[in-house]
Image (cartoon, rainbow, N blue to C red; front, side, top):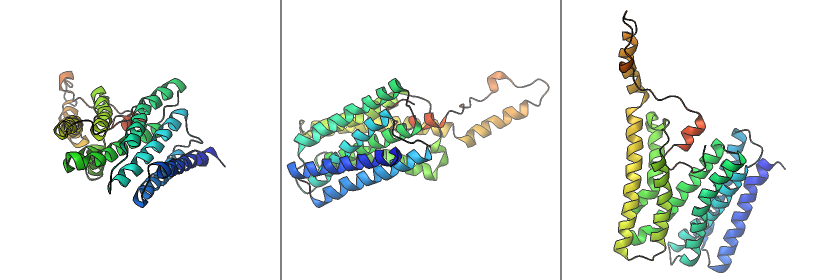
Length: 278
């Protein structure tokens, strides 16, 4: 059996073992089991498809680290769903989430050191990050308020809007602050989920996380709107016409058109971009 098959399937196997361990120790209800297994199956299928589309025959070293993070996120998902009808075992949830967040920095370091940076790895890392933020939002919503679900849902709303508005799918220039905000979401939500703060303080912390996220998305949406192809074409049209004049075009009048960048950069610079460098 090729490694294209064994890599993702091995992740699903480890996911099942982890869920069995959680069920035997802290307990999982049927909904938790289904959520964890469903997450594992979707991850396995999507990863296999991504490998085949990318022409890769195996997971890279950084991808295996991301897969380990993904398995932990599956365990966190099962615990959160189980806790919807009762108390979530924070003594297990918090350390498991902390390890998953810490490994987010490891896969990027491994990718740089091994020279195995790829578009698939960046996308895989980004999706694991985004789903973990969504799950943590669900965990803290009962204590903070349903509005905190916007933190986990904003990225998916952005993707959905991009299907209706093609200009939202454009490439974004690198922005370090975007990565800082993405990383801060998990840390801030984990602090709130740990239930160490009074309710008002937890609400303020979650509000700060949402405000940072709205600023980051707002900045990117504004940039994409300003640099949308239709506007660039309208701006460039007068310049093209003026180039036919005997005097030639003025350099100062030339529009600032963003250069085309590789697809890998386009994936890595999306909101909630992967910390694995591409």
